[in-house]
Length: 56
Image (cartoon, rainbow, N blue to C red):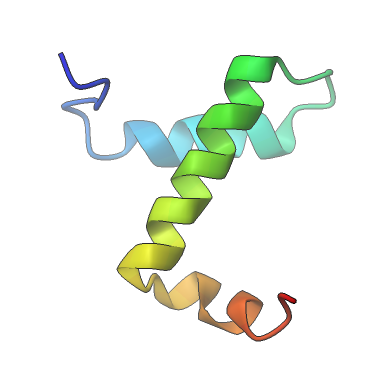
């Protein structure tokens, strides 16, 4: 098992849950979210293109 969901919307739902949560995040959620964002930036996700210019 690769850890990837067969449901294409599962990652977006998990990210929405993490971002919209008013609760303290678990270590697993933080690591998952950072990895998700890293992959989206590497893939050139249009929604994240503007963010790249503000980094470092």
